Length: 192
Image (tube, rainbow, N blue to C red; front, side):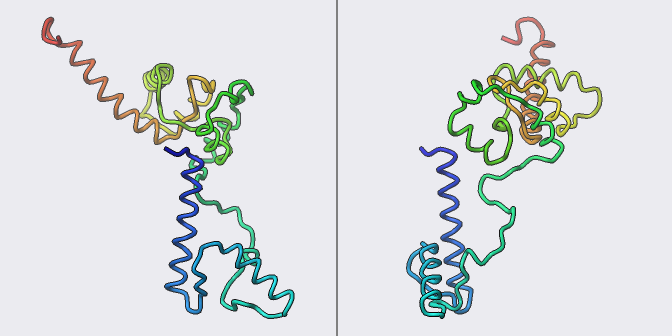
């Protein structure tokens, strides 16, 4: 079993290899090296150009020739700017974050959040979800609920959420409420 970071790294390598294979198939004049270590080709290309004034692979574009952008791949930020503003207000003690597992640390560092965004789990989070649903007087707005949720985050039993986590949990919560209501309204002796 591999962790989150290793999974992201493996997917990055797979994406790199797939892009390289597709380039070999579809791009006219794209060189076929027989390997995927393109950073070595970049170095070789630069060395030959510096020493001989010519390109070893004329149809090859070095990675260094591309302009830097803020675009990223793999584990990326999934939340809105509004949620990000609420997340940045969360202040967790270093003793709390020191207890996070590597699988918890990697995603929140990649997303720039103070804690990992995890699905609803555990007794404290179930109680908080129930409280937020019951105290909402209008149609549920899961985007707003995630922002309200941030005020309760402690990094121990309550973690920040994405709206999709609350929406998904709401489906299970509704089903469970219907079961509780059916048991409560059943005639004595029928619920057992």
